[in-house]
Length: 292
Image (cartoon, one colour):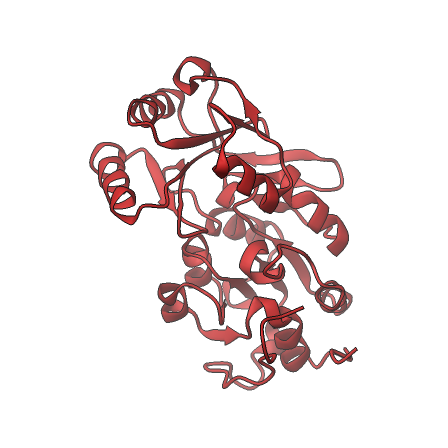
């Protein structure tokens, strides 16, 4: 695995002596954080997360992925606490497979956005009932399937197909000028109805207004009677920003977006160099051999 020499030691900032002992809950992003560059979980990462849980610390996953796409990874991690998906818009209890929180995009708003995207010939993906719908298969759906493991349902014109509230909408656009144009249009026309975020440079992710990973993290913390300062979170993308800012200890991966790094309390090694395992081993004194 890996790209070159592993980053083992970093100069960690703002972690004061005794703080780690107060942590009762850790929230992990998946892609770019727990997963390596090939979007896979390393056995050492799995082992580190399980060791943390054996210390009595709750371990949660918060991802922009669909639940069905996150599940193979959360199963390997043996996550028992609620799984946060779609950037916070859907939370599922892994023991029952039932949703415990769902905040879809209002239908009329989704319909208007879909019409705009179709008319301008952008690539749009709709997520309804944890299923993925696209107009047609193309290079974007092929790449998305490689990353997520999920096959898209090609249904023709999406403005004709849409009849239910989507959990999330995703526009994929590689041209940066067009990205700016799309973001400007969405902010100009729907700023009061939707939330925009991005987990990849080419992704424009749309959820219901005020929705982010931080929303269910706050709710679950209250349910668990865990204080804000007793929560740590790891992430790499701008869709992790509100969560990283809110928790007591927000940790950005070394490969994270520069803006996320600016707002984080600390930095963990690169995701493709066992970053999570290395950070947890050092700060939680795990008896974990990372050399074999």
